[in-house]
Image (cartoon, rainbow, N blue to C red):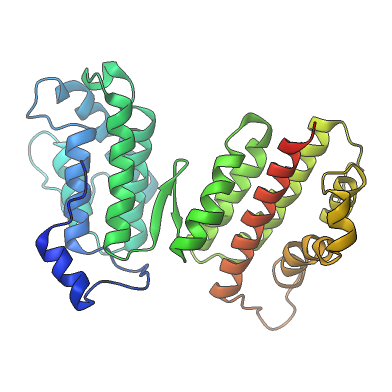
Length: 312
């Protein structure tokens, strides 16, 4: 369903009563309720005849997955009598759960189902099932943005967003570029980097950044038949890409800093802060540095992928 620009919303914008920075530790009750509305519209509502079997099946899958992973028999707040109504169990849990990461778990699992299952006509016998799934994801991301909550659903994952501009101009193009068979390894590692970042695992996020960067270059070299050593580091892989003209010659001559940027920004950040022993004192990696490295990685992935695509 489309997001309407109601009078009350316009007045809030005029007064400046809208979030100008993202928050990550709170899901407003209005946002939670809006997400439940999307579930009922897209995953199904058992009040409708066609929703009965499929809705029960997939709400059951979501609830039982959460229960198993949390080590529970029923989600918190569930009454102990009668048959389980999985729609109600999930909804009640989501509306009242205080742990933000568990709340995001429910959103991620449910929208994976929306993205992968509801597109089939036979799910709820809808002629425009594909369009409805796309609209549901678009509305979810729009609602998060509207409430100033810094998460978006992309490529089957909930990822943290630090800047709307950087996300739309850098991260999303990187995800689109990696969404092809040859780059599956790099895509998985880049998404893992975002997942670690969302959970506050800064050093692991840096490691996955480097893995994604190296994996993409290896994939390009394999695709093009360019040789490299079996245990090639980022520096060696960058050299292979330079030697084979992935970066145009005039850029090598006129932008001497490009190679230095590719060699130092991502690998060095990982090597100094995330890749080796930290000694007696624990090493702290600030969030803002991890965000920068994620964005640098995304920019490098887009650059290399588009450069490869432009080769004859």
